[in-house]
Image 1 (cartoon, rainbow, N blue to C red):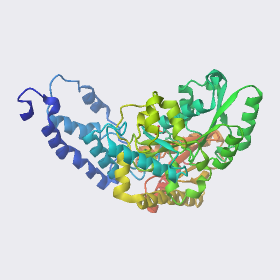
Image 2: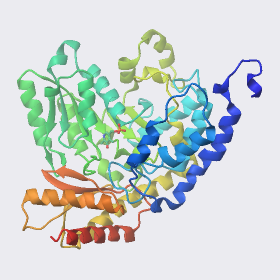
Image 3: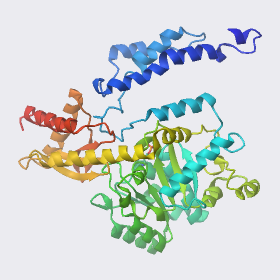
Image 4: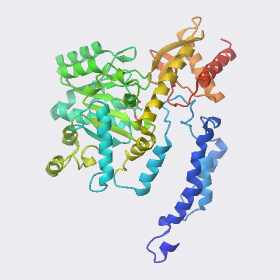
Length: 477
Ligand SMILES: *Cc1c(COP(=O)(O)O)cnc(C)c1O
């Protein structure tokens, strides 16, 4: 190897070989997309091949590169859930844009230090500009807002909760602090509140009506807590719950947050992207929140590890996260120079937002809007088709791109219906045509459809329901 003649570099820096391997083995990965529908949606490593995997040890010497790369493509990465398959409906399927992969690839090739202006001036400027744009989409004032790219919605929720605590509580009040989430809010919200040291028993799970936060129950809980000497400090509304896609009554939550001086955080990990769609009108009140979680690796079609936390007041982020406020005095005078480590938990970070920047530049927001609108239209179509059939009951109508339904026949008890629907989900997975896991709503086991892929066709939707009806026949119901 040329570079190692003087022993300055060793194998670790064989750029030539890495470059060859990228051409030969990495670029062709895109080809899988061409026939993604023909690939197994859930492909689990067979047991005998697991032994092959277990035999791969950590070596002292370089291994044969072709062998390693072939193993990577044929075995290691082949066995996975193909989230990009239009008929995968579980979790929030990440239907990634190739421009996001391109952006991530470029970014990690240059490997800029994403922490601030001094280290990557144009990049940090663009990231900040991007967050300002996202904030303005949510109705925040660009002049005042702060934003930070983080690894995901869980990190964003935690990052916001700590700011809420610092802004609304005195340290001696921590043991009495209470926070309000809904029974449908994401587990990461309570987790974050727990991580920052608030008593688990002081997180109130507010009842829901139609899977949305019940405002009356929220206010009653707050009043009762104040009467009992607790210190309410945070209410979290969800803009697009993971289970049903429902949007909490954000405007009314904002009223209550104002009335009782609580921090109002909105978890829009899944839903906030729909601000860019025709569904925008459903988010009224989001602009009144103090902070907002927005996952780009969900409905902005980015690779994993790309989410954003927005805070209406940049100075509040700094008060919590900056460790050297004297130094900050200088930089805070200029909006141009931002040091992201002063706004959140992490220090050494990739420029996580650049992949999104590339996607927006190369695809444009019209494409995003069209893709988002199509996901909602598909969910609606799914619902209409379900309603046409006798075997089914819609449990939660299409909200954004999520709906829930179940097999229903009044000759069966609720327990029996639960196990039938569980079985129908399993039969779907065994057959492999489409993947729809169950969730539990009001104690009922239901089939959950999160339809995030614009390529899904109406014929496929009809066919899925036909297939489920065939499974119902097989169960002789
Ligand atoms: C997915 C999700 C989260 C968690 O986000 P991660 O990126 O998985 O950490 C939080 N809230 C909601 C509503 C979500 O859908």
